Length: 427
Ligand SMILES: [Zn+2]
Image (cartoon, rainbow, N blue to C red):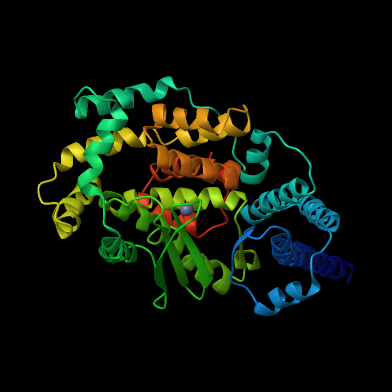
């Protein structure tokens, strides 16, 4: 009896121990997930409320219309209250033990929202601090010497007495599009990049984009994601457009860039997995660095260098009367110019951190970035409007380029899109 009793007690305690061990895990995870879902849904509301103070804070909202209507009706909530709310959410997140990508992503997105509110309240940040808190990056001035090699190359490829910028302008003349040629050029680019994107990314069948030509904007193109897998891409015609730029613009805004990224996030992260945080896309946030990185890298993912040159030379250029372009020469120029892409970040530092005036920065962009007056002025407009956002293109591209090169490029590119991603994740 005694023995039996002892045995049954042992079996009983083993069962209890097992229940505690396995049962506990579930009950421990559930509140964490519930907490995260609640924090995520409060984060969405916070973003919509900030947007009422600064139109454009929310780049896209694809969530429940009822939430948006309710927030529209309530009017502007006091900024101090929004600041308090964001700090409460951050405190709650820091108490959570499981530091998953989702938790870290929310922490960084809410930190950016909190910083944006504090800026609206008049708090001052150094330009570098602003970049770190809003975008999770640590930008630096790129030394000017690093541009001299590329400029020397341009001078070698385009010999002659005039400056590299003047020679570049002359070289580009045949590539300029008439206004009525812009839409047909976009159309031919769109078909190709879409076809190539669909070969490796599961684009929802209902997805589509509409193209509009616009003017008088500080940006050169913008993808407005409307939800339900639909985007409106606006192309700014303030500056002359060249046929050799169209493909990369469309890859950036459409396939496999912004439109594709948001379609896949809407389908997989928001609708299938119920991550409510993906019903809102705040512009001034770490998420944007990854988005711009995806958009900037896209063209290289869907075309090998040879495929790109063949497509331009044999398919796209001839449609616009360019039959005997030396594509190797064009490619050398393109590669040299790519090495100047960090110049816009330097320009922003000079203008917003080192108090240089606009004329000085325009000259700087001409000298080291080989930008003409019109393009440099547009760049200044962009920097004044979007400030540290300018870093997102170059930093996003570099971060993701390093990451995809560590394995199978297309698989890693897809992985970036379909997860909670923020810049420091890739470092
Ligand atoms: Zn973009």
